Amino acid sequence: ENVANLPPNLMILWQKQASAKWLAANEARLEKLAGSNLAIITRPGGARSIAQIVCSRRRQAETLRRRFGGTIQMQPRNWLHTSRPHPPIRIGRRLEVVSEPQDSDSARPQLIIPAAGAFGTGEHATTAMALRLLEQVTRNLRSGWRLLDAGTGAGILALAARRLGAAEVLGLDNDPRAIATARGNARLNGVTRAKFVTGDILQLKTGGHFEVVTANLFSELLIEALPVFRRTLAGGGGALIVSGILREQAAAVIRALAGAGFQLEKERRRGKWTALLATRKS
Image (cartoon, rainbow, N blue to C red; front, side):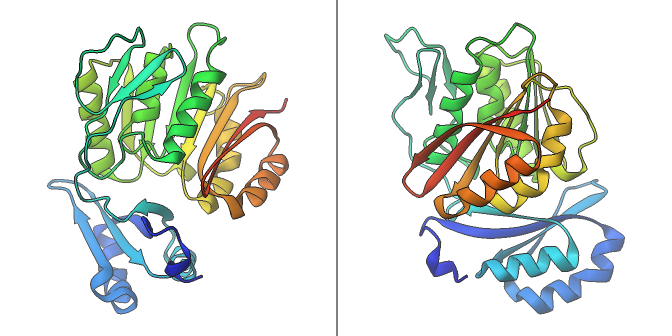
């Protein structure tokens, strides 16, 4: 599938966390396959690096994952550039997402997500739909509920959950820059009990700890991670919100949800995108 068939504002990114030993054995092979599209991101003092390749075809990304592991994701083409401020995004009657502090007559609590950096501010359809599903599904939850946000990016869904009453949240992303951004946004908003960590969702070991899981990820990764999400959700109808799904991929994700022990509760569409709400079957 050629990148020309993708929405013009998106690209496909393959990436993998790698030890120095793994890089020494594989960097030359990656460079031969990807040339100048290969980037190696190393943190000072860190034991692991991140290998990234911007792919021109989905088949190339799948081949990389099959040969070398790692994950593939849709990313905005301008993910390394600043964005312009956006109007307030009103999430039901309980939350307003803004890009900078502002006076408002609204009684909604505000969440500030600066319009800068690589990881989104909430205006993209995939995030906006997930936010609205999150607001709806958490209206009647008992106090003390917890949320896991897989592919947290700027941390918007996790931080919104705290504004909406979550007792604690965990944001997970395999990009350390995303985690740094999310932690900065938590400090900016004075949000506590929000933990953001670098990691691979497929390696998550916790079980039955969260009442809500949100995941705004590439569809293939969403499907692969469904057993992890089911294991992670608390029993008795824990809620799963998945987004980042292109319309033509929605049927495959819905089938996978049923096969993994989830009940589809709601489907939302906006433009080319679909978001789904499902609950964990007993």
